[in-house]
Amino acid sequence: MAVSTTTAPTSNFSFSSSHSISRLSLFQLFTLHKKTSFLYTKNSRKRRCGDGGVRCMVIKSSAAEAIKTKKQNGYKLQTLTSWLLKQEQDGVIESELTIVISSISMACKQIASLVQRAGISKLIGGQGAVNVQGEDQKKLDVVSNEVFSNCLRSNGRTGIIASEEEDVPVAVEESYYGNYIVVFDPLDGSSNIDAAVSTGSIFGIYSPNDDCLSLVDLEDTTTLDNVEQRCIVNVCQPGNNLLAAGYCMYSSSVIFVLTLGKGVFSFTLDPMFGEFILTQENIQIPKAGKMYAFNEGNYQLWDDRLKEYIDHLKEPGPNCKPYSARYIGSLVGDFHRTLLYGGIYGYPRDKKSRNGKLRLLYECAPMSFIVEQAGGKGSDGQQRILDIQPVEIHQRVPLYIGSTEEVEKLEKYLS
Image 1 (cartoon, rainbow, N blue to C red):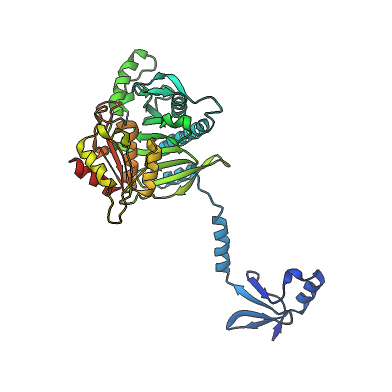
Image 2 (cartoon, one colour):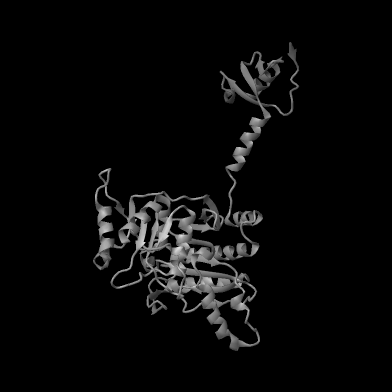
């Protein structure tokens, strides 16, 4: 029985026809509409049209809503800020820590801009000075350290900052109420700046500690020397105490990698919005890999057991292929590749540097915290990096970091 064209308002129709509707004139479409009638059947949701030759099928409202939702999700972006607020709502971190991490991300954005414009802004080349490590400072080392320090000072939540470029940790005078301890390497791999090779910033955040600031009298500056000494003691914490750690890599993309102790997450800077956007969740490093990153220029200075290990990697394996050597000379760049593809990164001790060259507080501990959260391992060749109790602010240790199986294999050679 033919019925009128009154249909349920929530119905959605998909049309198919042997005629090309786009080729019909307005008058023909009107005529087609007038001729069309629908056949209703109780046991079927199909509706058949008459003379127009157009067949219609009702799409269930739930399916239509799913399509609509899918389209909306395609445009949904989660920024670092919104992600941090979600972690705060879920009780993973406190609001104070959210502010500290946000200020670090702001510092990274500024440094990224400086790195990209280094040649134009005449920031390439040396500063003409050496840092506390006895290393020649690049112009961007100094500028990046100032940017990082200023962002941490101004957030009102940081109590102590310790930089690889500074002699001693500093109690933040702008806010004695902030207790978080932040350690950082403002520009790792700065020797690569002039060649526009990947560089990065590394940071770690330790638990609030009132002891360092308990003796501060704002009206008595003579106590600041004592406070400085207590700051040094409080900064020297093992990596097991880290609340959060991360790095920002300045390369073809600006990538901010972060862990809060519950997985590793990666954010990419969108230059259109000026925001870090979540791009990878719960990163897991492969259990094994076929790449190694060592500076083999120092091969003759290494321990014989380490040489034996490296020689083993060069031998063809079961698949008749040796390991592939990949070395950038920037810890952040080499580590990021290892994190994604698996393998091992190493900076061993040698005859020139009896304890290696990488700093425990500013580089080794934060990176080891990240790799363990991703299912990997960080070691000095004998013990877990995060178990080492620092005895000096700028203490150096050997570092072997990457896939669990690869690091354990190296430990067997060095044992």
